[in-house]
Length: 395
Ligand SMILES: [Mn+2]
Image (tube, rainbow, N blue to C red; front, side, top):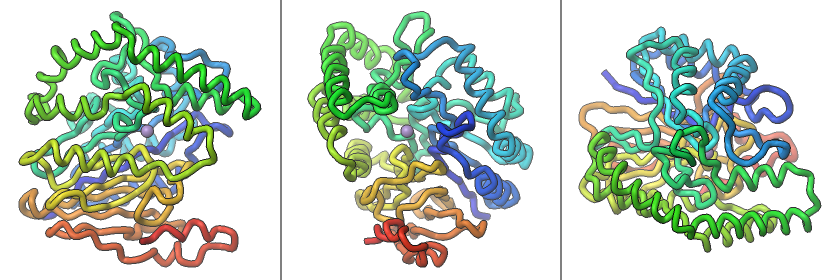
């Protein structure tokens, strides 16, 4: 029988109200119900940014507050989306494994109190629930999955496995991207925004070259990464190389900032590019699939011989930027990976949940690694007038 892994990400479940990016409760619940009832499905993976724990309101100070506040934010999320919570509980009750991977918007899941609250809310203790994978989720030969923000120069953490800024672990680092997001929500004039952002980027660049950061990065690589690598069945030298690949340099932050101040453009190409570098670093350990979220651009692209880039896309209202995906620019997407006999011949699909309430195929990866794009699903080929941009991005 087929052993299917379902991966979705970037649900961005918020606290309701106008700032909440998620409004597809009924669709997501229907999609979860379909998978809970499917005997082929073994596991659901929530690949980061599942709950929105970053508050972009300008009134908030930079840096996170205590565990109690983070737990309260998550409780407010479940109060705003009770059906989704019930859908996840029902998935576990149906005997499916559920794995939660941290993203940059739910980095506070690193706090033990927030993890415990999530486990309790979902109905744990339950041996089928895995909270929380801090960075890489590895099934040797088959897949290596991560949220993807470590490859994004404004959203990478200095130490993703221990994202705290103090010894007592009271404060979780906030990536520079969240600071920029807050500036954009502040209602500043373009000129004032540019000036404020430039000052913030200068401060960030100084922080990056500080002796304190240099030393903490060195200690992290020496004391934390090697045992983690063994835990996830990868060679320590490989995990160290992936960590160095994601190390942010000050000039990249400044370059990003300049682009940020210009009109929006396609920017998601960095992730398939980083995936290619990761595949190269993995060498003989390269699995069939490297799976990411974060860019909100559902995708399937061949990387190297035998390894394919997959992106789960998003379920929130902030869809992909034009050109970021080689498929359609749509939301409500996910990835399915089917292990039929051995990992080397696994297949994958990228799917979209249609407005009519059914799964539609966006791309398929066959056992030889060839990516097939069947063309736009019927529900997407006749967009209403004014929505032509939605149907543009097939190559
Ligand atoms: Mn993200």
